[in-house]
Image (cartoon, rainbow, N blue to C red; front, side, top):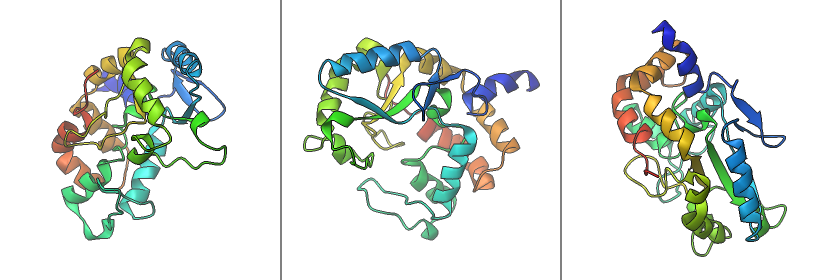
Length: 228
């Protein structure tokens, strides 16, 4: 197992050595930068101003988000965008409620530097507070033009939507794009044993429950994506 540690670190958000700045707030894997820049330029020709809400996210950052959700300090939403009273849930039900929209630390695709949560800044006022909710990207939402553009052109630049539709795991996320050439390699390399090893050596909220249910969670929420 020791020989796997460098690879595991990259896959689970513990190693940021391959990440580079795309602006003052966000990082991406260095192999993704050229495609990201091409994507932004192409969108600009159609009047879309690509802005990033989230890109690379390390293990510790994801662990803080996870803990806040587990402890009811950040809202947990159901599929109808209603807030869930997380204090009424325990065990697998609690974990599944959180993982509908929030990834398990060590298992977020954002750890890879291949993922971006995006919106169109040209479609909203400068003081608009992005919510990252499906309605914003639907037919009556401000980012519907972006949704249509991605449907038609994302693949031309190597990107796809891993959560384009709900498949019984992670909710649909029309704002989440992934750089397929690299993400598919990481998806193949990522394994249940690698994640288990990481979570056994790095404390997170609900750790014992997570480890107990990890095979189920791995199949339902981590490998269950919409293929490019």
